[in-house]
Image (cartoon, rainbow, N blue to C red; front, side, top):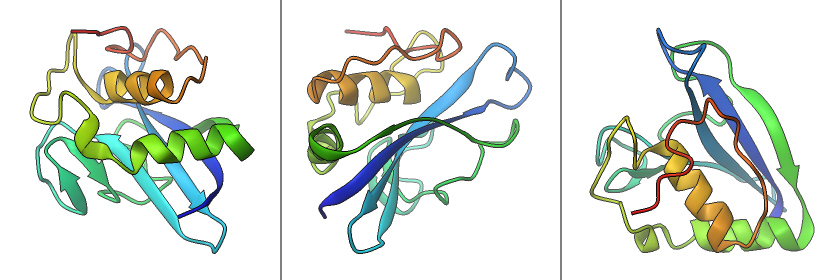
Length: 135
């Protein structure tokens, strides 16, 4: 799929949304297709799953139980293509078989890893617990 844009979204987590959020990507294709990519605490939970990495487990704009999702960034052009290229190879994520709420790896660790692999400089919010996890 050739991306027309890649969105970065987040939603507050249930009960602890004031201090913790869950990030994910939404890739929009030139032909109208749309896919949500994220790490979820349950492995092989549905959609297209690669351990804890999921494509289309939830609808693109669905929250995660702590409130509505928010759009925080949109990438177009070369940056969108680089992000989509990393997401097209989910098996490369080194923690597909491991998940920990704290300190990571978790959904925010995955988003930070994708951005680093795509050479995109973007700082996730401090509530993105796990964003700095690097083991």
